[in-house]
Length: 231
Image (tube, rainbow, N blue to C red):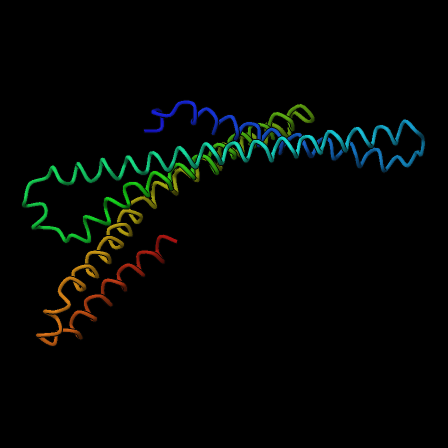
């Protein structure tokens, strides 16, 4: 779906690259600024150097702000279009099922799954754009800069980064079954509540309000346990 909008995808990635480049460059020039101040020499050359450093840092911060705005523009238009298309495709796919599918599942459960299908893209896309890409670029940039300054420290940071990434992937794999269970419990909540609302008249006629409340409370307790375990 993302590749249907190649220009927007390029804009998002390019914005991330510019942002991380600005994050890495700004501290280098700020260090130079403080070095000049520490020297304490007062002459026209020093004042000119300070002004030049301030101009460069201000320019970097402006580029960072501009890149963030451009990235936000592309993200907004890309995610909105794709999420809308995912909901349309999810509806079409759901309506193509046999009648037994609709008899065996609550309407609220099916509705929630279609909504979560498009919502999942937003979550994955945000994680990729705001976490994976910036972290990858920042780590690579930090390792390269540190390696230029000190080979031993650069290699140590690179090895530590690889080990940390491997550990995070291992933990994420262990948590995946719990995520699936929590998503199923979340869907069960929507299904139970939708069923109770649609059968409100029947519940009132047969005085089954207490029973329905206990059923919903049990569903909530199950969701709560799985959520706490996941978090």
